[in-house]
Image (cartoon, rainbow, N blue to C red; front, side, top):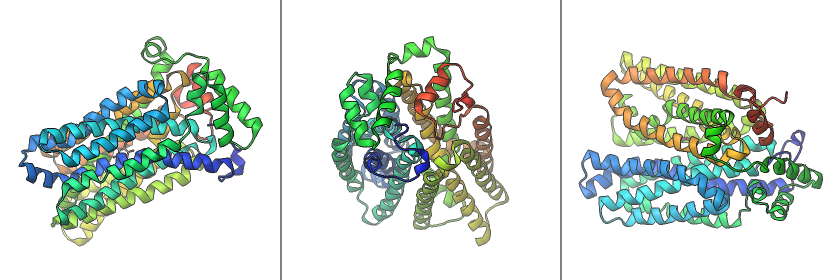
Length: 468
Ligand code: BGC
């Protein structure tokens, strides 16, 4: 929500505490997203041994979740419009619980693949609905920080999964590792019950009284509640549209395209190459034992979490674009340094440590910038009348690009070699910086309504956040 408190007041007070509680609960969706991304790399060797799986079936066990996520993201625009954001999050929670328990009990590889597909649908629905809901409920001047909380939860989930992978390597019980995710999913379900519906969604359904009551809980100042109501009502008069708006309106096509491009570049940074193949990359960097590789991977997860705090602290102060420029530069340097070291050959402790430092530099660069900011921008740039559709498309593209990057990394390694592969990612990060310069608007402190109005009046994408 915009203008709950004046930006000059800074911190959180009064009703804003309620907004923070709401954001934390919704951001639990990110935790489940992260757990499900992170857990499989550690569980897979045990699953493979248990069912004696060949490489192909193993690939399916891994990627079925991403396919499900892409499908879930596509369907969730419709769901969150018809059921409301809160009920859609509740549905995702139920799917997380069901999917995790089914994974744990799966008697055959086929069932495990279907269970991961179902879990993927939950991840897709949650990764669409949570940032959308957060962008609609968060006070304008802390909107960036609130949506970053969602990304923080993703990183905490990934770290927790990496840690449990180490535990798993001692007790060797993959069923528990997959099944235990049902517990945070239940906490999430309880949290969702306590959440209010998005005032924007309620107003679009003409449920004015309920919307006002929720705004009043989120905001101490009655005058501001009324300004907010008027602002949203004005935007809500336009009917909700998806495909038809896309076909008819070139301004909307621009924001949908920008959302998709941002998500593609987020994946082309190479982040998930590191997330999925970190132990392998550490093996290339000279870490010989499996245990060393797993611990080094935990450090990756830890840096990912810590640097995300940096994003939360900076995003509403510095603005989106400066952080993205800095992040792209750092990621390019990290990947570039790794490419050079791999080219020269990693021999000796000093070079080995420099390689690790380069990888961690890359992760830190991603976690303060592209990680949270792409999700923030994607939920901000879509106009009210096409927001659900626009975010559904960008979330789908995130998962589709994720699958492509994960599926091509190993082939790239064997086709052009390790050093050239990392060099390619370094260049893609530079291109990302140029895309930000040319097309990304600065949205810090700007209400969603202003951004939507500017887009629909034909303003250049990079000027959407300007008032004149
Ligand atoms: C990305 C994921 C990635 C995660 C890592 C998210 O923003 O969308 O693909 O695995 O960050 O922290």
